[in-house]
Amino acid sequence: MKLAVQEQLLPGRTLQEKFAFAVDAGFDAIELRGKGDFQFAARLPELKRALADGVVMPTVCVDMPHFIGDFDPARRKDAVHQLRSQLTVIAELGGVGVMTPASWGQVSLRLPPFEPPRSAAEDREVLAEALATLGEHAARNGVLIMLEPLNRYENHMVNTLAQAAELCVMDSIKVAGDTYHMNIEEDDPCRSLVEVAPYLAHMQVSESNRHQPGTGHLDWAAQLATLDAIGYDGYLALECRLRGEPEFVLPQAAMFLRKFL
Image (cartoon, rainbow, N blue to C red; front, side, top):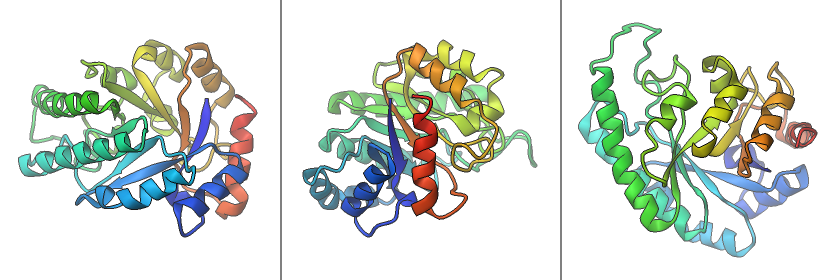
């Protein structure tokens, strides 16, 4: 397993400067953020320059105002178009793929108004349709589209690793786990990782409190040992809030995680 860190957490004006800091801090790669309105595709010249300079950028985490499970058909269609573009870009960079949740902040079954305007069967149909399109595009480009479960307060459609794995109907559709969301939703995170092992392509890491690893109560020894036992050889990408200045806490976080690798 290797360590990555999301680009917005890193000090530096350019990806080259950010990567230099990341490597010095103990990380192996940068996880990119994929904004909407084709902003990510517009970065391709910048990204190619960074790649030529040795910057390692294996994955993209979508950063858009709407997603593939949106209730509005036009926004769903736009999300699919944006993700197709992002898949094309990460393929040009020789990366692994792009991750997305079904949705974020749209509705929660645990918060008012409690009732979504669509049935669970309709939710699944919408997600299956979007993922089929994205999976085919990912396969043609030799990359992955990865579905990330979010906790029940942020999304009502896909909350657990098992629910995400049920939607992996082709080899180019995989699961991206997140230790923060797993802490809320998985009865036994280690068992859940074992059960979805064939579908698991990526892991994002943050603490039980959404800060950097080592500041909360997650059992890192157990979860990282489980990942090792199931043969997971992908990245652990730091996606969190930082408690402290990045120059100080990012090296600490990398050192903390490496104790268990």
